[in-house]
Length: 286
Ligand SMILES: [Zn+2]
Ligand SMILES: [Zn+2]
Ligand SMILES: [Zn+2]
Image 1 (tube, rainbow, N blue to C red):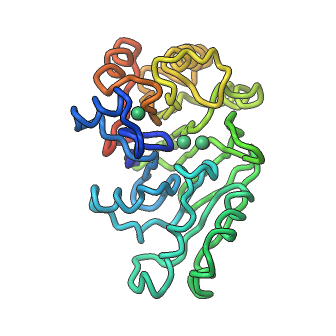
Image 2 (cartoon, rainbow, N blue to C red; image 1 turned 90 degrees about the horizontal axis):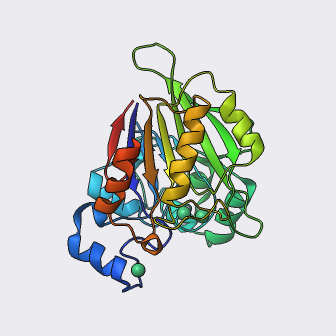
């Protein structure tokens, strides 16, 4: 499995669209891995996680064929994870030639509702019929082609918001068992029933992508995001229950300028703790 980070920032990007704070100015001055677009990830060529407003930019930056995507998995309907208007240009008039026309979308009911509130009648019937919506329920696995996906309830903010984090498995290329990936954005500390799920895993995960939005802030597990001090405590808990071992890629991701830590500062904290730091374009082979 190839797991690729296309974007690694929180809602406003970093440097943020409309911010001139010291963290934004410094990221803009340093460039490179400090330039973070809104969070999105791609598994192999066909499973896309989230649809932020920077999706088009990701296509350009990484020379992607997004029409090869068969499965779209949405964590929740905050704008940085689901920008519904973009799906309207997946219509036959706008996109006459596609590698794959049918797109299976896996999400909460509210995410689907949001799309049909926002498309402004621009989606023609044929294109609408190519969108296959699968409404998820927490802890109920779904099979998307080779991927087995288990939605887990996230702890996140927003009125009427039903956010999910995901456990994604797919057969290993060598045929020996499954690759096991956790995509844990956006979420604060997990509910007891999610920890119960973690405890019952048959093996350590290959990749854990963990919310690190709050950077140097110790949230004490009180919010809908985590800071690096929280993340390092969660890592120890995951190690204690066998969910993380020496082979696990434990990757901090989804960063905000309000968390202050630039890429090299994040690396200085993550390295000694056996963690990694995401950046736009980082690929991991599992
Ligand atoms: Zn977010
Ligand atoms: Zn800023
Ligand atoms: Zn969010």
